[in-house]
Image (cartoon, rainbow, N blue to C red; front, side):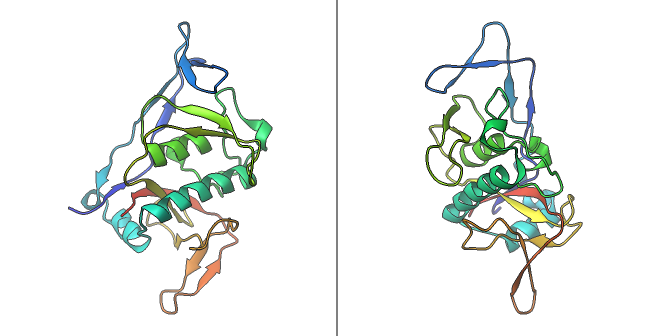
Length: 208
């Protein structure tokens, strides 16, 4: 069996205000309140379990380096184009995207930017640390990190409708960094044309 394909990664269950932060930005569990971040995906599910997603992931298949680039791109674009700015973080230092019809994070993750990023790059687990970025376009935003990365990180795929296979597949530009547009690819010529309409994360693929 080849790659595994994941649809929707996790949802966060918040049972109160659970974590307090030490001066280094590491989350520690409060003795009075508890916040659990649980992996609730139905997978990773195999490609055979969702043949449409298999096709999408094959068409948009990328290696680990490109997957990490896309994860960073999705986080950056979500923060810069679809949040209230660096000071809009909630008490857990998370940012939630505003326009859900043009979001870079999936609905299965509650459109949470940092949560999606850390799950794609590091997987589920505890030991999450936070820090405020001090350089680059996302200066001032909080970023989440963990110590051990996935050997094959997950990356988002996009369509013009929120259900996989229900619309046209959309792609970021291969050169990425500063272009937050998504593009339709002509099946004959391979030409990429930017879309001005809505776009949605319809699933997550495991990098090659």
